[in-house]
Image (cartoon, rainbow, N blue to C red; front, side):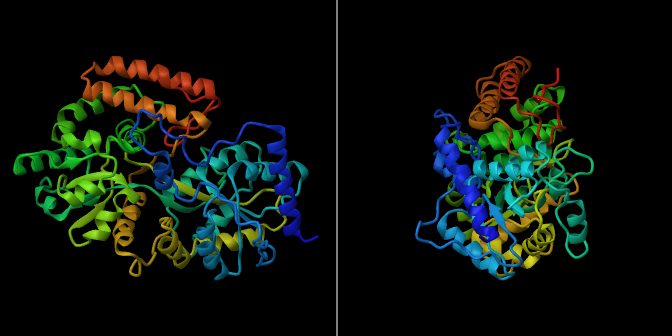
Amino acid sequence: MSRFVKLLSLFLVATMILSACGGAQPAPATEAPAPATEAEAPATEAATEAATEAATEAPAEEAAPEVAAGDVVFFSTQFVPVEEQEKFRAILQGGGFDFTGTEEGPLLDVVIAGTESGTSEIDVVGALHGTFPPLARRDALMNMIDVADDLAADRELTAAYLDTGLLGSEDFLYYVPWMQATYIMAAHKDALEYLPEGADINALTWEQFGEWCKNLADGLGEPKCGLPHAGLFHRFLEGYMWPSWTGGMVTNFKSADAVAMFNWVKEGLWPYVHPQSISYEFMQEPLLAGEVLVAFDHTARLLDAFNTEPDNFVAFPAPAGAHGRGFMPVIVGLGIPAASDNQEGGAALIEFLTRPETQANVLKELGFFPVVAGVDTSDLPVGIGIEAGAVEAQSSSPDALPALLPVGLGERGGEINQIYRNAFDRIVLNGEEIETVLAEEAANLQQLLDETGAPCWAPDPASDGPCQVNE
C-alpha cells in the first residue's frame, strides 16, 4: 500500500471515529460568527476573512491525486472548495507537487497521532495561525529556523510574520509564513489635498488621521471619513486601535493608554466620521457613491472601489500609535511535523510556495496576499494590484505590530467581538464614563478568557494559562 493511500486511510478513520463517538466538533478555522445583534451575514464574514477556510468535500468520484516530488504529502485547510482546489493544484504542478484539502479538526488529530506513534504520514501542514498552537503544545512540529534561514538566502520573508511563527518562544519557529489577508485604508484622490502638512500617507499616525478627517469636514462642510460600524468594526478595534494605542489587544484593555485612546476617539475622530457609519457594512459602496472619501475595511470589502475606479482611489496602510502600527493579518503558515520522515521534501515544497513567482500566482488566482518581498504585481487584476502595495507597505513597516485573530476561544469567539463593540458603543455612542465602561467590559473579557482557558496571543506576550487583563 502506498504511503499516500495509508495516509488517506488514517485520515478517514480519524474522521469516522470523531463522527461515531459524537464528540464535540472542532473549532472552525475562522472566527465564530458574531452575535445576531451585529448586522453581519456570517457567510459574508467567513468569505471575507478567509475565503478558503470553509471545508467543502471533493466529489466522491474524483480519484485520489498522485503525490509527486518524492511523495511529499501536503495537507492544507486552505483552498478546500473544489474550484479553488483546481486553481491551487495547477499552481502546485509547476513544482511537481500536489495537496489534500482538509478540515482543521481531523488534521490536528492525524498530526498528533503521528507524533504519538513516531511516524507522521503528513510532511507539510498549511493552516491558519490558530491551528499551530495546539500542535506546538504537543511538540508535534519541527523547528523551522533552519528552513527560514535557507529561504532568506534569496528572498525576504515578512519579518513581522516570522515573529508570529515563534508563538511567543525565543528560538523555536513553528511555521514559515505562507500568505495573508488583512484590512487596509482607502481614499479618493480628491481627499489627498486635505492631508495634514508634512503627513506621509504611507506612514500616518492616528492623530494625523484625525486631523485629516477634521480638515475634510471643515473644507467640505460635512464629515467625509467612514468606518464600517455595521460590518467588521470589531476587527478595527481589536487589531488596529487597541494594539496601536496600548501595545496589546487583551492585557492592556483597561489601561491608561486605553483611556487616552477613547478620549481621542471622542474628541479627535468620531466628530469627523460620517454619521451613516453606524449603518455601513462594506465601505466600497459609500466610497463609490462619494458619501465618504477616506475609509477603513477588509481588502475584500474595498476591492470594488479599486476595480471600478482605479484612477480615482489609493490604498495605504493603517495609521500608527505610540506602540506601533497595529494591524490584523489573517496569517496562513507552513509547518513540518516533527515525526515526518521526509522533512527535506517538505522543505522543498515550502521553498516552492514562498518563491515570489508562486506567491504572485496565488495572489492572482486565489486572492491571498504575499508574505515575501519582490512579488511582481504588474499582471494582476487592477484592484488587487492597488491593494497589494498597501498590504506589503503595512506588513513590512518598521513599526508593524501584527495583532492576530483571537485564538483559543472556540465556539465562543463571537463573544470577544461583542465585548469590544460594547466598550466602543457605550463610551462613544452612549457617552458613558470611560473608566467605568472599561472596567466592566474588562471583567467580562476576563471571565470569557478564564472559562475558555485561552492563553494570550500576539501582540500580547505568551502566557501560562488563561490570558490576564492587567489591573
